[in-house]
Structure formats: structure tokens, C-alpha cells
Length: 533
Image (cartoon, rainbow, N blue to C red):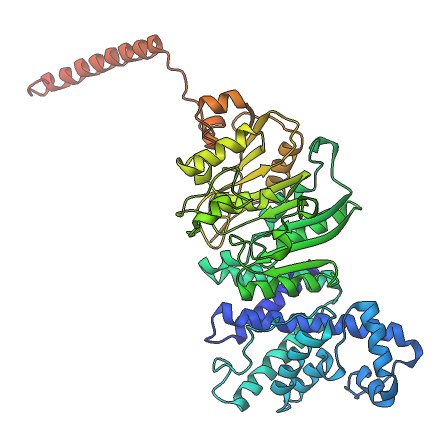
């Protein structure tokens, strides 16, 4: 509740301050400042522990960052201190770039705020972390005309924004979970205002929960429960990284651990959101790797290793790739190791290209869950050939149909395909959850009970009339390897059986009643001297 309250407070601030700026533009400022607030708070807390009694205690009314005072008084020791901080928290922030100093500049309306922010962002990108985070703030234009027509007005606007954020945050706990979840809340709110663009960076948390809940189960025997350890997790279209973080959170809640999480994202703004999101959730830079590049072209060197012994493989793969993206595969692509065994997806829809990309890197004991449009279940041509081979090789474990209008970016219903390389069951589980949702003003949402029902049905491979069914490969083959969910699990209510004799008897009784009423009516007409009917 605290996390949502902080998120709502910050959203209200954003909504009131952005003026004529659209949600996409203001999002980058708001989230970057929240990120700086987290880095600074975490760093100052760690510095206080490191310095112990030497950490300055300032008098009331002295609003300087205590660390800035320590730097002034111990200039000869700052280099050693920063080396120690790199070992402890994996990064350094100079005192003048800490949020406490930035917010004080904003509160006192200092005219050097804009310049200090610019220098601070560059420092964090290039010098804070051992593994440089170049371009982390590349989409933040502090000199944009949208902030003001000149430097003075822009500085003034930034002072107002930062002061309001500082005041809003001051009322709440700022531990890593609270700030991280507030960040996620804001991403969701900005997604709601971004319409179709939201699909580029946001998977609703309720859908993330289903995918993550599936991939953390034991792949050979889901009924036995959750895995205690995942060596690595991949999302090759990671957006803001919420899916990856959801997997990590679920494993840790079960007392388990995740070695390292990997994400790939082609959109530069979203790529930066993901990197900030990882750090904001308390992850060290050694615990994750996000790569900026095109998944379909496989631009990540780590995934292009040709030596089978060194091939990258992942225990869990989750993804929400762009739906039915047009792509231009060349002749060489047909021989690419990701597609060679199954064939190329058509130019009109790269859905199966994304699926095969991820599936290639799935470990033998891993599980992959991917969100796709329903067309992949029944479209003919190249997609039918890919689907058929995956089915014949017994790699498709489950097909889950979700309600329509769950996404900000599209109203179409989607499905989740669950795939495994080594699968114990020789059937496919179909879950038709299309009618299980709560309707809200703009979106349909899944409640916890709907999510739990899907996960419980998948885990124990339950069958339930008009909801779920295990379908043999023989039946699927009879249907031409068509996976259209309603072929196997129809939600239509059966037509009631009609008793024709009973209907005939009722009609006969009605005719008698009509005739009796007609005779009575004619009797009245005769008495009135009128013509009978």
C-alpha cells in the first residue's frame, strides 16, 4: 500500500507539472530524477556505515550533504574512500551530484541547478560504475524548449519539478522495494497515457505474474513446486525489464536465488528505462546485463557463439515481443542456426521468428513462456510448418488464452505459449481464460484469483469443463495441427435439449385457449349487433 501511495503521489505531481508536455516526454524526466534519488540515498546510507563516527553530524539548518562536508575536511582520503565504496556498493556519486544537494539547489532556486544536473548525469553515465553505463540519460534533454524557452526558464522549471518530487518522497519510506515499486507504478501510469507506444516498454504486472509463475516451476514436474535456483533468465524483448524482475522476485520469495538476468531491447529509451529499473530494485551491476540491439538480427555477440560447448543457454525465458511485426529476412537468414530446423517466419509477421530465437537458447531443463497474438495458433503457410514441427517434436507444453483489452497498446486478445525442449507429457494443455477478468473503465484486468486459477491449472495440469483440457497429439494432428483454443476448449453454453412433443402439446393448449377466447369475444360482438370475427 505504501508503494502504491508513493507511486500515486509521484504520478499526481507528474500530471500537474508536465503542462503541455506529453506523457512520453515527461516520463523520462520523472523517472530519471527518481533514479537519481535512489542512487543517492543508497550511496549516502552506505557511506555513513563505512565512515561510522567520522560521518559528519550537521547542525540544524545546515542543509549541505554531510558527505560534501566530509570531502572538504578529508580531501587526502577521498580516493581511498571511493575505492572502498566501489567494492561495497559498486558505484560512486560525487557529493555535488547527490540528490540531497540537487534538491537543496532546487529548493533555494539556484541558477546553477541545470548545469549541475547535466554534469551529474554525465558523471553517472561514464564514471560512477565500473562497467560504464554510457547513454543512460541520453533521452533526457535538459535544454529542451519544452522545459522553457531559455536557460533561465528551464532552470526554474527544473527547480519546481525537483522540489515537488523531493517533498512528495519525503513523506514515505525510501527503501529499495518502495522506490523500485513506485518506479514500476509510474511506468504503468505513463504507459496508460501513451496508448499504442506503451507496447514498446510495458507488460502489465498481472501478465508478468503469469509468465514468471510458470517458468519458475520445475520443468519436468511442475506439480512438485518451484525451483530453488535459476542460473540465468533471459528476456530478449525486455522493455522496461519488469518481466525479468518479476521472475527474480518470485524465486526470491520462495527462498531461492537467481544467478544473473539478461535482457535485450532495441529501443534506446526503453533500454535506458530497463537499466535504471534493475538498479532501482537493488541489483548490482554484476547481477544483470541489458544489451541494446536488434533481436531478430541477433546483434548480441554473447548469443552468436558458434562453439556448441560455449553456447549461451538459459534456465528460464520470458518475452512479450512486438505483435506481428513486419520484418525483412534475407537469404542468409534461412541458414541461421536459430531458424534452420524450423524455417523462416513470413515477412508479414515475425512472431515465430521471435519465438524460435528464444527457443534456440532454452536449456534442456528450462521453460519458456512467450506472449503472442492468436494468429500464431492457426495461420497457414510458413507459420503452419513451424507450428507443426514444434508440435511433432513435442516442444509445445501449453496454450493459454487470455481476455482481450489487457494491454494499453492493443485491445486484441493474446495467448501464452509454454515451450520446453525436454517434456515429460505427450499432450498439450489448453487453458481458455478468455472470460475470467474484471472490467474497468479503459482496461480489462486480471485479479489475483484469475492469475492463481491459471497458474494452479497449469501446475497440476487440471482439466475443467469450459476452462481447460489436455489434448492428445493424435487429436491435434486430426485438426491439421491447428491450435485454435476454442477447437479444444469451448466456452459456449450448450443449447438446451428441446422436447418436441412437449412443445406440440403446449401449442395445442394455446390453440384451444385462443379458440375459447375468440368465441367469447364474438358473443359480445353479437350482443352489440356488430360483425363477428
